[in-house]
Amino acid sequence: MAFEVKVKKDGTIKLPKEIMDLAFVAEGDILSLDVIDNKIVMTSSMPFPKKFYKFLEEKAQQLHEHPEKYNVGTIKNEQEFVKALAKMMEIEDKNNE
Image (cartoon, rainbow, N blue to C red):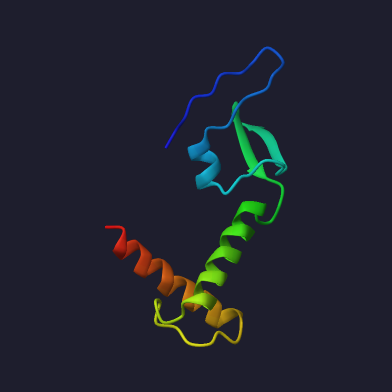
């Protein structure tokens, strides 16, 4: 998926909302720019953007509040959370079809 952006006189650009959502980029995140083969490459300087952590927090809260909805029991560790999250996303994807 490619988007075009216009560079303003002062060099600023506005990232399309769709790109920000897909890349979990939020206001205040730090991005790195590089030029590779005459192409500008933008990457996050953070291991995971703040918006991604918020996404995980929201999903964890949903799993905690409604474990029966996603057919999961008590989550005791990180591995169980990842498995429950995968099951949750699968169920939500099926419901959105």
